[in-house]
Image 1 (spheres, rainbow, N blue to C red):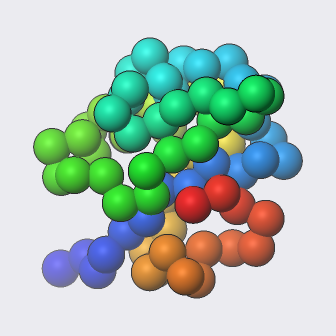
Image 2 (tube, rainbow, N blue to C red):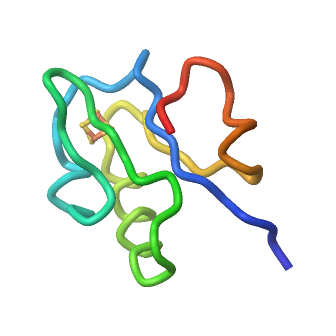
Length: 77
Ligand code: SF4
């Protein structure tokens, strides 16, 4: 069984296209020039996160199989 996963947006890649916000508004939000996210979305929103990952033109979104405290440096959690 998979362990806990966290969502991240890589600020080095995000160009604020906002497709993630359209597909998963409960998880993603758009700041001044970058998306932010709820790192631990409810299980009911995980399919929306997967859709946002698939749609992001910059491949800036992903899951990490680790607690939020170990998200790679440079990522927004
Ligand atoms: S779809 Fe990708 S590039 Fe666009 S705002 Fe979301 S994370 Fe950033």
